[in-house]
Amino acid sequence: MRYPIAIELGSDLAAFGVVIPDLPGCFSAGDTLDDALANAEEAAAAWIDAALDAGLAIPAPSELDAVRQRPEFAGWAVGVVTVDPATFDDTTERVNITIPRRVLRRLDALAEAEGESRSGLIAKLTLGRGRRVA
Image (cartoon, helix red, strand yellow):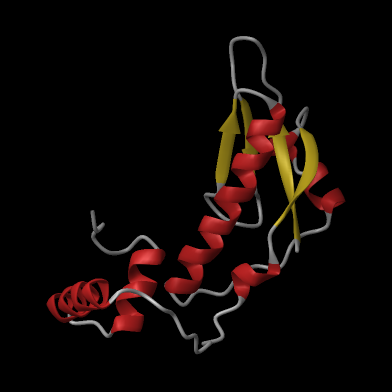
């Protein structure tokens, strides 16, 4: 899926700024245009992930021309960032993993301490909402 972006051009002294108007509060920056665009794609994916976790609806992308014509982006460049459609997929999938027994015991102990199932703890850790295991 492609979301339109507004790009505030950078210079030798200022970073490039990127706003994703359809995702309120979602913005990014980078010292180069390439960095700013890559960071904007990451920001969009993180915004969508957080919105899905919160049970919020994900806005549909606007037309690129609509963003270009907004007065707050006068003088800015416009473009698009691509969000992997898998970001929107909350389908549960059963998987089979192989890990050493000692690791499984640690996983079970952590899951019990967190009040989670194995699967729940793995998802929580993967999505960055749990404590980190060293």
